[in-house]
Amino acid sequence: MYRIGWLVPGSPTPDGARLQDSFREGLRMLGHVEGREYMIEFRWALGRPELLPELAAELVRLPADVIVTVTSQTAHAAKAATTQVPILFITPDPLSTGLVTNLARPEANVTGITMLPGPEIIGKYLQLLADVVGGAARIAVLWNESSPWQSAMMGEAEAAAHRLRIKLIPVAFRDPDDFASSFARMKTARADAVVALPDATTFVHRKRLVDLALQHRLPALLTHLEGAMDGALMVFATDLNVLFRRAASYVNRLMKGAAVGDLPVEQPTTFRLAINMKTAKALGLTIPPAILARADEVIE
Image 1 (spheres, rainbow, N blue to C red):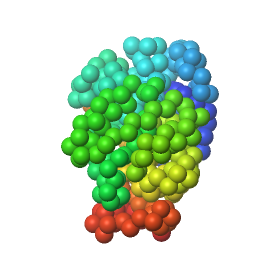
Image 2 (cartoon, one colour):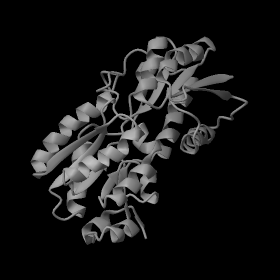
Image 3 (cartoon, rainbow, N blue to C red):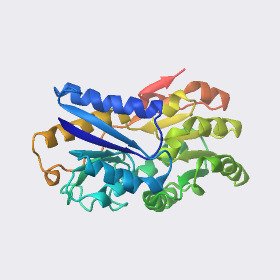
């Protein structure tokens, strides 16, 4: 039986279970039956990153036939644990974090799927907010300063803000406990709107971000589709369920004997725009008709 190791930085959550089910669905669509042809071995770090090296080593000892990782931190832990077992990542930016140096020909035993086309996506976030929030001259960017790839993204944000003639207000955080003070700093800096960069923390705690944005009357763009139903004014993101189903195709090819180096890293090509009209009304905003016409989903 093919053994799939799955290394998780946190604890079991409904969001995580849903994405894992999308992965299982992808394997099922390819004709694989769980419990008969493959099994999944989960290892949870429970929010303690110091446990990741030993958990990764444990998966190698099983032995796992492939290790699936969903953050840069877990991918690096798995990469440090083995040069033989294939590692499949689903992360935002494997280039800036050093997981791979070439997307077309990933080296060694690491490949996967990126959640973003690259740091340049930040320009699209800022442009959308500027188009929706008329006169938005000062936009806050909430970013995780403990994330290496977000540092690269902030450099691109500065360049994009200069092109758009927007004053950028970088607001860093390290954990969810910083969110309240982060929004207070945005208001002190007279931000007109805020974008929260894609990150495991902003994904898991998106409802708290939405509530704080509404409390401070700040139009917010989130970068996970689930945020629109939670009350974010706007979401521009790829569908994570689609990415996890796509990840199953990598495992399918590995099952059939493909070499990791022959599996290029995939980048998303489709992003969805969702707008929450209830939130727009609460903030006293009128969404331009051109933006509404572009939206894939309008939540009334």
